[in-house]
Length: 381
Image (cartoon, rainbow, N blue to C red; front, side, top):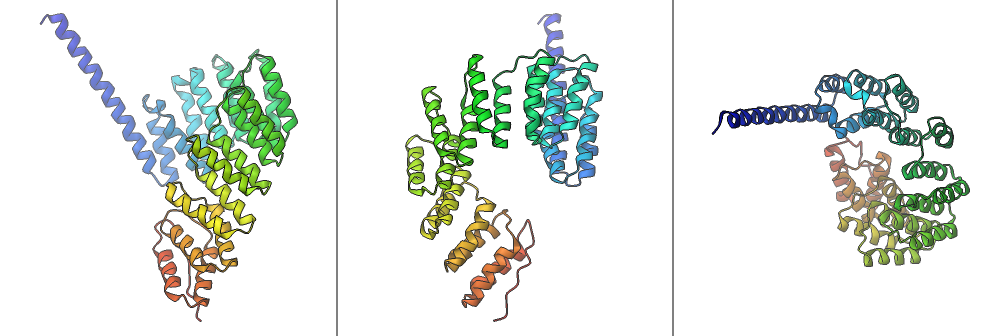
């Protein structure tokens, strides 16, 4: 083997080893942050980890950290870890800025997102449709729906940025969230005149907007347009229609839509089942509500807290105490949390009906719950 070949092999081996070490270090940092329960310590560990270049390429750990801090309403901590990122060379890249903007948006911190965007000029960082769309998304995720149109029209013109399909879809969502459905349709027409073809996200946004607002006929027109454009509906499309039908109290038609979904090979999700259950609860049909509750259990989909909090009192109202007991047992044997008073009402009802053993079992399961200690008491009869 020539000396040159040996040198190349040593060089490649060293580079591979260094790369593997860097990757291993980043993974170790991520693991530490994921398992850290103390939020103040999480912030410190995050800032230390951010020194590592490979760590800064892990968007999932950024997203999870911001999600947890936002959930605890520690917005000052979010600002601390994201502002800390500005000291690194990545801040000269538009993609890194767009990521920070999106993270602030996911926490509802639009002013911070706008600040990052505006500072890009000072850093001589390009502002293209990429960071523009991140800012629009941050605006909508921060629920500043009324500001989205102004950004879309004013800022794009000021910076000479041509909005793309993502831009239009984001503003469509803002209009739909505000209930400005006529403005949404006008924007759809404008989009098509500019040569942008609506995609599945476009149609799903409009479908949910119309069906959820009780404008079923308009929702059906959008469905027809989607078919004409040869855009295949997915589970979100069908879920929007299911919601529309339940609001119209057309549960037989909703079940037909479910059969259509199955024939098209589209699996129902938690939203599908929950919509059906709530629909039958609203119609006072316990038998069918029970059927779809058991179906969601067989499907492997997660149960929805709000749906169960409506189903439990409905079962009690209908006198089906053992069904209510079964739901509570499912809750207490899982990580799902419902209101303590709701389960206590089932314990009380079971005791009153002399089903003492079932009532005791719920009390014991509540004491042993691994996520939340329920305060359940067996009433004296």
